[in-house]
Image 1 (tube, helix red, strand yellow):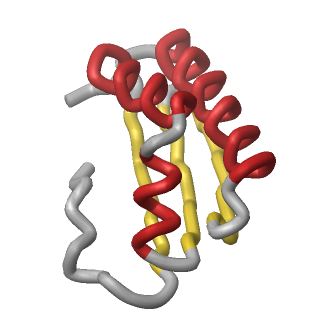
Image 2: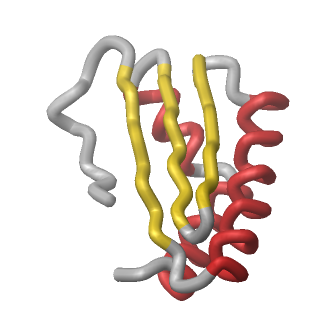
Length: 94
């Protein structure tokens, strides 16, 4: 998943992440981390306009809508997001 959104410096940004976990157990572990991210979004990220998560077997999908690039940068600085990103490297299929 690319982290470079510099080509979108202004306006709303929608991200749609598809993650295939190495197993159902790995998917469930990632789902718990994503739930922690979602909780953080709801509590402290007013410029994240939408954050939806779905899971089917070992596949997860996250749909996010942000007010602007600064909102994404703020989101990516949260401890919950950093924990999720660290886990993706070991739990997701590459």
